[in-house]
Image (cartoon, rainbow, N blue to C red):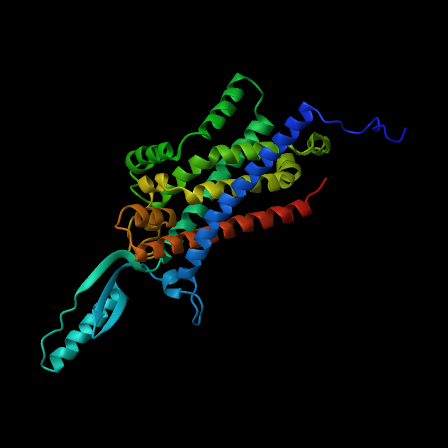
Length: 354
């Protein structure tokens, strides 16, 4: 009797074999995706950190983080190899010419090799990226949450509302280049905002609106109906009920939509290429004569800078250093903004429970 298999023991079969094989296919595919992601991000972190950080005090390449992009000049002078940005090279050459003039000698001839965008830093790109993300997400959250409140709380289910929801889902799949052309035609040309911050804000906001509306509407629907009925039974108006008994509990889900929106908005190049981004801009956005000019000026941005440095100029060891350094800083900024949203979301989840 002891040699007989247990009645509930699993027995080999073709179905069990296929199930286990499928399990391992899914598992290996997951590990492959993780490995590819780790390789890509690891490559950026390793090479980019070499540009951003340094071994000497203050251990951070402050020039790269606080200066504007410049051309790099590489030359040999008096037996030594020098690498200088445009500003430093001009000062160096003027000093050498002045010293030669005082000594009564001809000005020294310096044979240089120049590499565009390979010196200086990315401070204007950092500022422009943060302004674009914050401005566009502010507009997207205001319009998206307002639309979600209407669709979830006020609109009656019918053909027109179902058509709107279908249109929103379809817009989520539209390529970003199409939104860029829309922004160019609508905001830059028709409204005559030109290439500016405000044109980039609205273009990026419209691009991310489907994600914000869908996620916000689902967050509002997840709030129990009893919260609404209890508030209305106590004499509150519809808007008072939504403001006090629905929105606070839906905020964690709404912030989830903002996290998804930030991830998409920050990395887009095509829309800002047509509406907001400049290859080079000497002045920072707040360096304007009138306050109104702040909104109607173009900015530099990290994704567009990476695109220009990677594809529009000759590639060499100096441009590679800038590419990886810019990508590394870009990932840090996006991660910081997203982490702030996650912390705020978790805090709200802890405050509002049912």
